[in-house]
Amino acid sequence: MVVKVYGPAYAACPQRVLTCLIELGVEFELVSIDLESGEQKSPKLLLLQPFGLVPAIEDGDFRLFESRAIIRYYAAKYASSSIELLGNTLEERALTDQWLEVEAQNYNPLVYNLVLQLMVLPRSGHRTDMTVVQNCKTKLEKVLDVYEQRLSKSKYLAGDSFTLADLSHLPNTRFLMNEGGLEHLVKERKSVHSWWTDISSRPAWKKVMELNN
Amino acid sequence: MAIKVHGLPFSIATQRVLVTLAEKELDYEFVYIDLATGQQKTEDFVKLHPFGQVPVLEDGDLTLFESRAIAQYIAHTYADKGNPLITSNPKKMAILSVWTEVEAQRFDPQAYKLAYELVIKPILGRTTDEAIVTEHEGKLAEVLDVYEAHLTQSKYLGGDSFTLADLHHLPVINYLMGSKIKALFDARPHVSAWCADILARPAWQKIIALMKH
View 1 (cartoon, rainbow over the protein chains, first blue to last red):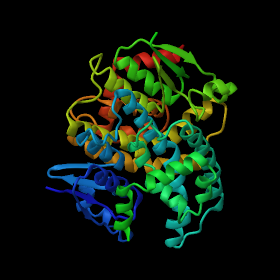
View 2 (tube, each protein chain N blue to C red):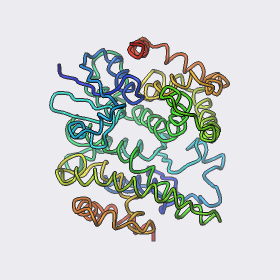
View 3 (cartoon, chains in turn brown, purple):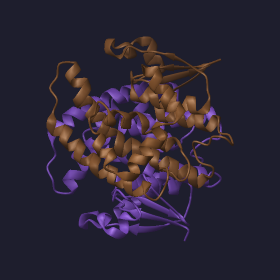
View 4 (cartoon, rainbow over the protein chains, first blue to last red):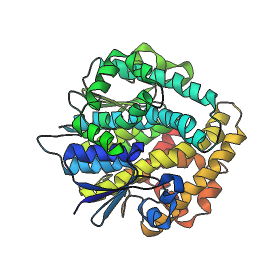
């Protein structure tokens, strides 16, 4: 039985899940949700995701929501000698968790607000608040300085290997590099730039980009 | 002593780590970081926490930051000590993980701001911003409606027993119970019962006692 992933392929959080599943070679069926018409708030989907958000997954009878919980589950389930997205030891796991938290607490809120101000609000006829945008950019510079420091000493965020901590950054960083118009933030930081080039050229991520087109 | 925690007893994130250590009955050395004088931004401290925040945990050679990652690490590494906070069953662990994400992504963004405006600012002698309170009160109410529905079918957030999913909420709920936001919790019987239950746990009572000193 294939895993059903609910959510559009263009949205950041479903992309996080799809990338992970492809990295692990897990077959899935994408059930696209029309966010613009509010399909995610329909009674049927609220049963899967009570906050009316995407993504959610159905794996037989088993249901989960929250993209970072989903990727942790599958990474643990399909851990093998060929791919270890959670690190090989308890300590590597802790460092993976640490940088996953950093992504969720320090990186995502800033990029999320930029997406909201620069894309979502204008599309629904609202004005962009440039103060918020500038605020986010300034904070993002400081966060990326910390990443630069880390990545100058460590090939990937949690250590020598690619883990969920790096994977989790793919969708939001893609936005910064494209519609966000903030690619200079990444390109101006040598280690962040090589890290981004590396992780965004992984076959799994490229497949998710293809799904989008 | 193997475990060291750097932080401040009043800090919500520090409390999250301290209560985890208390639940696991682990000894640790506490290093007080004076946020009022900006000690967390000194060069020495930034070596431990590149974002210049608290808490930081040291366990032998391992240094970790991000309170939720630290709590996960303690819960997994010391699984056989004190009270169980996680489960080895992958599906149950995944559901637990959904609700630790919900706490971080849905609950905390609203609840933390309310605790900051209504409880922390007055302690620091600053003025509450009522507009922020109004904005986040409404959003928290909606989140708590989802919690109420979930807790009608589940004794604790992650399942039948107390786990990290419940624990992560303790510091902020504790602060909010001392504010007008208590009414939001009281108005929802299952949420209210769950709060009373988790706040009464001996480990949490130890943290409250620490704060009084």
